[in-house]
Image (tube, rainbow, N blue to C red; front, side):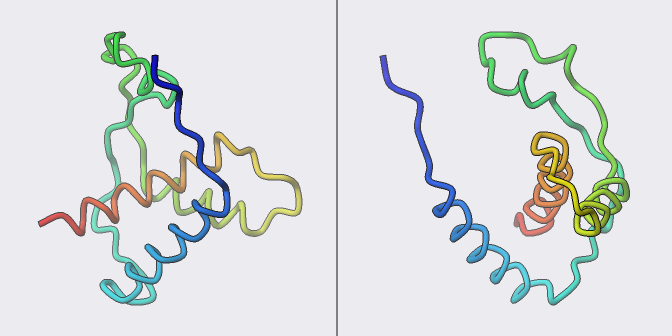
Amino acid sequence: MRRAPVIEVQELRAALERLLNAVEGRFGPAVDLAADYYWTVDARAAYEPHEDPSGNVGAGQLSDDVDSIRELLGRDDDPIIWHDLSHVVGVLGRIAALDRP
C-alpha cells in the first residue's frame, strides 16, 4: 500500500508565494472575483473517495470568505486553521476558475 504524501510547510509557503506573484502579474494587485456563491464539498468528505459525497455538498460565499480573511488579518488570536483555511481555499478556488481557459 502506498504511503500518504508528506509536504513541508516551507514548500507550501514557497509555492503560494510564487503563485500569488503570478496572480498579481495576471490580475493586478486586486482580483475582481466576479461571483459570490459557489459549491463546496465538506473537506473531510472530499478525501473519502469511496463514499458518496452528495450529502456533504453545500454552498460557500466569496463575500463571506473575503470578510473572514480580513477579520483573520485583524485578529490577535491564533487562527482556527480548518476554518480560516476554508475561506482562503474558497478565494483561491475562484482565482483558479478565473484563470482557466
